[in-house]
Length: 122
Length: 111
Image 1 (cartoon, chains in turn blue, yellow):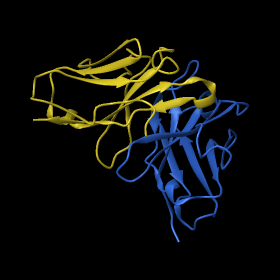
Image 2: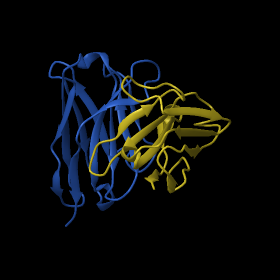
Image 3: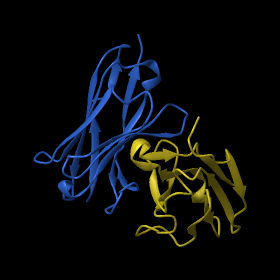
């Protein structure tokens, strides 16, 4: 069965850093683009970042996250990462990793993890 | 403020049809045929219902259909069932600089 399992969330102070991980299983991880989408408490979905199947291309939302978040992947470990820095209170959200439907540009997400909660607070 | 505009709520009785709109611009919805729709039940991860404007993933009932006209995409749910009550989000490819834009979500209530 296809699974994505996020980890690494938690409580962090403003200005701090955190690295999220997403472990994939049940499919050939290296054949799919992967993405991060977040959802603040009681709010809607917000695109964060994406990465191509080979890791050579990365995509970021054109807003305050750009420059503070870095997406990467390790295809030998079937794992997606999101390095988050200079965290702000408004970054508080559930962070989901998601698999992209094959094809270009791969912007539909057919498999989602259960999410990991990131809370930025002093 | 979300990039794509959706009505905050929609409703219908069991068996009826309801349509949810998603309005963007020529830089996203109107410029590409890459609109997706997601269903999200409380406390759960989103589920892909429609992609590439009209395509249904395997396992999604054919009661769900998508369409697009100009800068506005629509999701129609026919033969409403109680389990369709959820939040629905649209998304669209928005070019390389923005990549993906989401709508603010629509809460669908089955009366």
